[in-house]
View 1 (cartoon, helix red, strand yellow):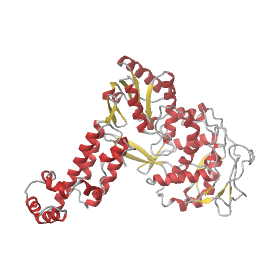
View 2 (tube, helix red, strand yellow):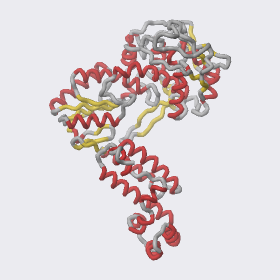
View 3 (cartoon, helix red, strand yellow):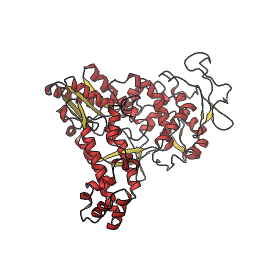
View 4 (cartoon, one colour):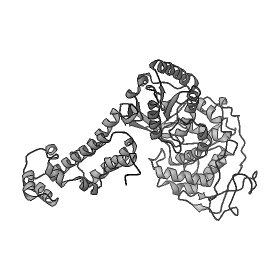
Length: 522
């Protein structure tokens, strides 16, 4: 009989009279080739110092002067260890990434790895999970919790908390389900991802770009453009229906077990998969899927879909994949239909995934939308949907009914524009960028004109901005509407481009030019 026990600090552990099996229909499964039962030995186990912080000990199977994982600490407590905000002693020893034969769980809970994981979690911020503990409040709790937490992880008794379910509206309708783990579980997941990532990533396809070091969505988009340029003008655009919510746990665990021999790590991941979700205060079980929002989920998604990548590579297909978004490029519609049918069968039979028939199609590349971009020949442009979303957001931020100070308005707008041009600036659309920049400034001039309200105040503001007295009076007394006045030469003279730059508004054209001509634009 197994029971969950909650001990000091909210730490959940599982205690029973039996050793937990890795098998079971929901996740770990006997199919993963994982034996039932596990050793409770503590290999390469750090001790705990007088201050309650973890202290790393020597791996008894490795001589201090041999192997890739040399130790450079002196003494059991290692006076060289650095204290981090997380309360974990950070070792200055640099070690190589362990392989599948290493004691992975010890590597995961190693002080230096946990410390690095905390830095990532803290930098990403995020909302609290079901326990309500915030990023800022976490370190103080974690310092006291760490010794028991580490022992629970090594003993296999740690029980993850359910994730908090959040629904986000999609721009095209419907909702995207996100799961927000507790800060503690985000920390543990990040620590797992940091160790497993170097094990799996080298074997991933060169055509997989999502959530991988030194790869980005831009690389995927450029690869598609280069492939189109080579003469492949037909795209097999496949959409996976609710991919993250429908990942089969058995399929995932089998693929993890190919490179992870530490059964305790597989067991821990299985528990995260089965942790459940909390909706309106009620816990719901999860028998499939990996929750979007956890640091470990992107890696697990790549592990599942790597079989697809390898299969496409064996068949000689040209493709690009970013997470669950992927496109295959072929030379003819007939070939496209054939590839569509065969890939659909592979996904449904081998990976137990479902293709969204309504959003999947064989199309010409000039009708393809991929990661927010479209393609005109081999030129990269914005998709119509991306442009509409941009214009909608700018209208919200420059709405004359939004009663905020102009400094605040421009601050929010500037933040959005920097992020947008940073992503969409790779498009070959200088003329459109310039047009949008003029449109944005006109909308801001319209906001200023309305904010000034009265005729007398408008005249004073124009004079303050250097407009001649006669022009200031004529424009201040004008009965034309805000939108009409925003185009007037006088208001453009007063609120000129350099003035907006001083106020903090970034130039889209300058940032576009810097992306495309970085060596010539300063």
